[in-house]
Image 1: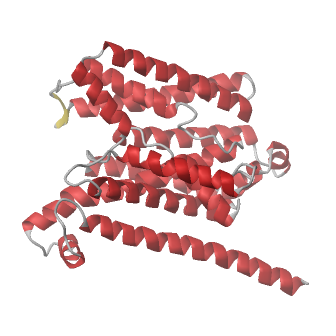
Image 2: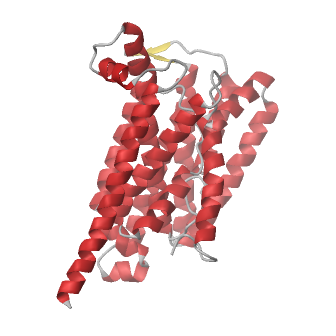
Image 3: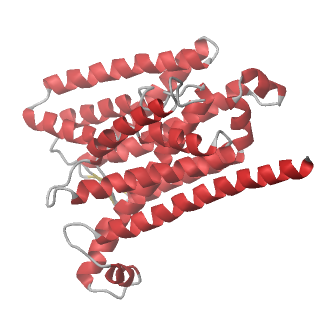
Length: 355
């Protein structure tokens, strides 16, 4: 009997290890392919030489200044969005919960729209330690600030009623509709050029990725990933319900609060740099959960890898499908996410993809 249990557990671990390893291999090949393709086609040998500093100046400039930061940002932002979705779905125990359905992305969109309408085309040549603050930086900062405002508004509203998952989701929906209406109002008063800039930003794009934005995104993602993985057993307990979590010594309300803050910070950082990119945070955790179950020890890395693959492949497709045009990646993720999510729902028969 004990031998059968051991063999079953060993097979359980092997399946999850193989899935995570396979996802990592796909991500590596997708990254190499993304570095090769584009308006200037490069072979794998040229890419390797450029990465080691032995290629032509043109090839090195393409790789180091354009494609590599974009590929790395796609990987980290995709993983970060997937992690934020996983955290939100776990702490709220709701399969449709995500930072986007809770209104955080709508708040960031409003912040960006407000900055564009109030100062579109203006460059503030304010130097802070040699750093020049441009209009693009103001848009990023405004989007980040308003996303954090939405986060704390949701937490404040839900805390009034005891921080229950249902109240948090309802508070998020209220914030979603509020900032969506505010964004529409800002667009109504904007000029044609300003409205066009707002719409393009709302599509979501990695075209303005820099090494600085990648470093900021990576730092936020690494800190949140470290904390989440360290507490994976707490999230397992919370997934089973507040009462069970409490019996195991887990403070459900405190963990839910910290989880919401981390998920919001990840989303706010990604959205403020890249614009609105939908469905990555919603679909990635469901794919991982269907494949591996609900053990967060494996669910966390697999969700991050799936999110990274989805955003990287979507961005690569957006750059190569209609050359020389580059589509906003947010359009591609929406087209990919909707049918995929419907498939996941149908696959579960009449149940949600949650359980």
